[in-house]
Length: 168
Length: 333
Image (cartoon, rainbow over all chains, first blue to last red):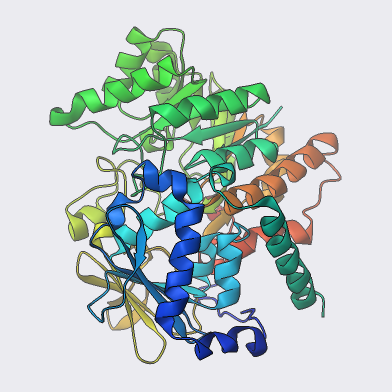
């Protein structure tokens, strides 16, 4: 068989310009996280009510934005997601650049693809990671309470940026 | 007419496959009765009905993979899965176990039975036997055969064959692999996953590299700029006789776009896309490429040429970011 026996090297790692991601560092992580969980609680209102996020109870996940230099620690309280301020150990860490997280959250990129390309990294309880991944992609956009104009705006912005990256 | 059969691990993926022009979508249930048994993935009784309704309204068929091997203490979980599929109005069940084939044929005589790749039928005598005994109407062919062998099989098979066209490859001892049992105590054949999440560890190293362990066993170390693969034993790098490398199989994806005209000339009934564990984005991207390619090839098989942008799109989502023609191109066995 004519196959390339060497592991493939990765070259293309798109990133947002620092002036977009760097200002995140000016605000303490806890503030970001409190903002993020408010948004998530709003988006996941229905799945939360139906108990689909119960697997996160008493477990802590952290999302690390490497280029932004910030991290969001959260867990699930009795009724909804809450920011986790303590320095106790985390069960799951997902790290990557802001651009890749935006791609993932809009469903434009496949998480396994980004994992193969080493753009998203997962550490800790892998079962928990799979559960979060599959929960997110199993949810239908209609069941999320995201206002359509906002969704269009974000998608449009990413499309614009992506075109600039791929067609220099 | 060659059918395009696409994977779906959840409702949005099923919709993505239907919307991008899949002729059929295959799914599994939320337990060990299928070979993609991962946390949070797959269908329950509520969304299988919604999925079938969505697909049928748009002229797409839905198949259920119930393709692991029942154990003595769990037989009813497997028959329940067959019953749930039949009662939901599924178009075919994809089975591997002989007992389950017998159950389905007796209990649901009208239902279409497909032989799973896990059933490992590599000769037409075997396909003919299963067709006569259980009435199977299609067989999914293991990825170990060369194109010449597939042609021979297709010429003599009493029923249409389904071939894998794209997706992650394994060592392809389908239905018989025990590698992960060694590391995790669980077998893909009975539990439905080669690398259960609870047994996987990814450990980041200070230099940016990553270490992968399965059941505590070190299976690979990736440098910061190396592509990663799934954390299975077969795709690990090991030291064998003083040499380090992929001892069994490397992380890679099958891509048979260029064989489409040949597959059509053999009269292959359907081409299958791997990846129920992937996201709706993957399903949409891959289905779109294959729909376009199959339509183009059907219109003009002689003039068919693979578009570079098709291969680029497929390579991007491939495991290990490289693709191969697999065993199809082999001249030896």
